[in-house]
Length: 385
Ligand code: GLA
Picture 1 (cartoon, rainbow, N blue to C red):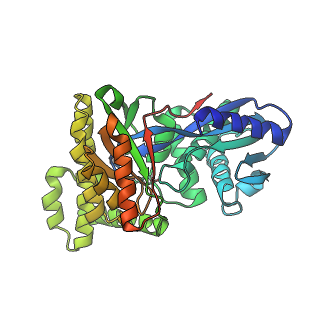
Picture 2 (picture 1 turned 90 degrees about the horizontal axis):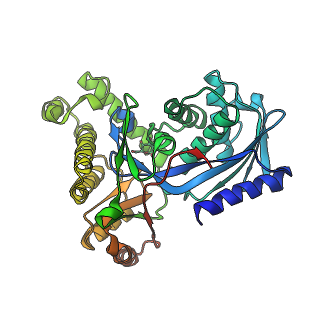
Picture 3 (picture 1 turned 60 degrees about the vertical axis):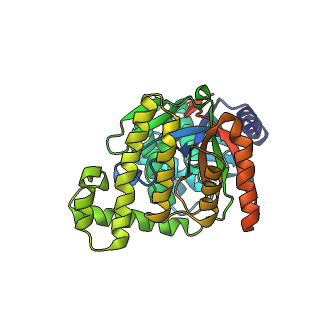
């Protein structure tokens, strides 16, 4: 399904549901994170890029309340200010939409009553941020439809608030920042403490390379609980070390910091975050210098750190990384929150098919369900179409 199809589906869904054409179409993408995993809620660095896959919202003003059509459910969901004010009343995809309305209203912004229709080609449950894409698309549509005074750099925090305080997932800011602020052809170097961004050119094709994203199709296991546990353990470690966040422990502080921690698990969690932040900085330095192949070992080291120190990978993910590396990838790692989801591999442009085949063969050997491979390049962030 291409992006154009998604826009056409959103527009058609709108017209079929409401009997009129939408006032406009807004899109926001899913993301793949090149490197910097679980560093965002530690005030650290991340380097995601936007996927070509996106959520499209067709929207028009309404007299009152919000009505939302999705391809996932036959009837539109309708809610007013009362339902919005009570988190937990709506569930499933509708909670993300209501959460955005709630977060905008909480920020004192006069959200326009609206009719919306949604369509998406972001794979759901693959760790490619389909929910952040939904939040970001709805937020962008409502802000622009209502002419609300909300500069782009302040939008990710409100979309994140919808996810944290309304939907109830304790995630960081990376996914919403990526969906809203990425630019085509670039990765987004984001300092999650200051919110500062730099758009780093990431033209793999110009270097004869490609990024292969392999969805493990592994069932997500305990994602919510384990994610929250990692976050708590990082925050507890920061308190023990007397710093505001693990971002404040640099690579040269690492050994003395580890020596001050008694517990081996906490030491490994800290080591992942501190080394991962450094790997993001090193990756950016390579990309700035045009040394794209050289980021490969950093990607693979990131995976090893997630597997052994942060303990967020699963066998399907580790097998995909090993198979991609054996097939000649320059580097490979899990991308996203973990416990399932996708692996990305940096490969020669003419090696995408053999690499995908190698992963498929390894999955068959292990008796895992077949994986899904895609070649992806950096697409644009949220925008009106
Ligand atoms: C999920 C969260 C992000 C981030 C990643 C891990 O995608 O939504 O905030 O923490 O996991 O890097």
